[in-house]
Length: 292
Image (cartoon, rainbow, N blue to C red):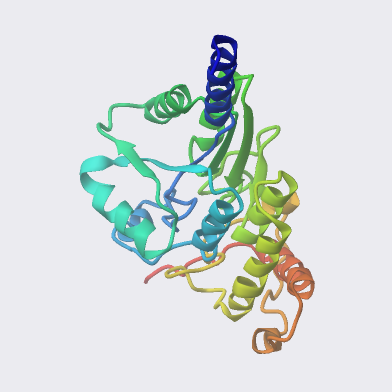
């Protein structure tokens, strides 16, 4: 091989390697109230849910696996502000038992580190130099603000920010963070899947399969249930997803026969899902009766 050809070959290889590194997509996901039903704004529930391993939001594990199948090159990070010494084994067991794709779990070393999440996101970005970053969190505490800060610090990188809207900023208690400009809200894995399809991070086929596999379970759920693998636990206040100023109590247990009739297309299930979700979010959270 001549010198010019060798130089051209080396340039081509280095360009390919550089492109591979810089074209990576990374997904950074929160855990509590994003993947796991922790109810962090309710201290007694949050404490009780600490040791729960099957308290996942139904369909999220399947969705993350589908993302990986659509984009095999994607790198997953699970980022939690929970204390490492207390929660590392529990969070790892939670992710494993509920079928989430392999990825690095990063937790906070010390509770005094208030900037833990933004510093970790910076570190991940600096190390992997991604072209695109997918951030998934919830509106219970600081995720929307932290994710927006990350986006502002790296204007050359594409950020897609998805926020699990489990609390309402209109509520009198357990007040959530309002939607930030450019952030996409989701209530269940189905909403998130639809948004990912729009941004070409999930195939339409994967969305349809997720709908067929999971929406029938949604129709079988007890609306008063708050523990276990649930689409929407009873405490969730999702009115902001529909921009509802006031709740309008209504039955959201629409035609339970749907759950037993399996010969339906994905499109039919998605249409029924939309109706049920709207009714649920208008109905609001189930208020616990006080113990006398």
